[in-house]
Length: 141
Image (cartoon, rainbow, N blue to C red; front, side, top):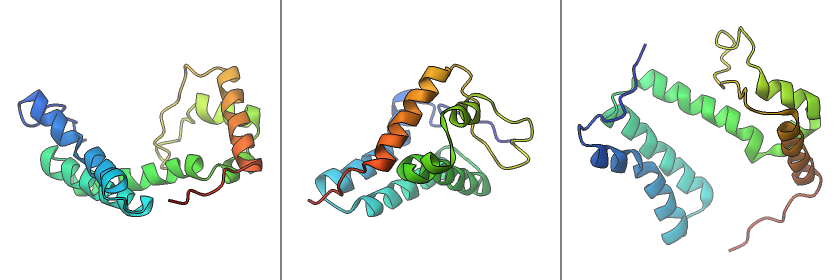
């Protein structure tokens, strides 16, 4: 099992700056160079993979699988229509609050959010419903 090192460069300031490189890349491309969001996101992902593998010593297979897992989980929030259409308020609560015992064997890496209340889940579900039924117009620069 790979053990994460929070200070791989033996200098917490430098380690923090290196860890923040993917965010800098993303913000530079999207905010200053005005590149499309998908290009900026892919460049940030690439920078994150390089930082994880080179600076933090993360195994390549683990870095790639973590990226894919993050993309699969994050897609629920990028495209909330699908999540809203097959989950109700209670189902969302149980999906987020409790982690199935066989989650790791099924490839579900998301940790349980045991601090979430039913009211919190209901608020998230109401937001999903609002976004799914009344989507915001696309951004036009």
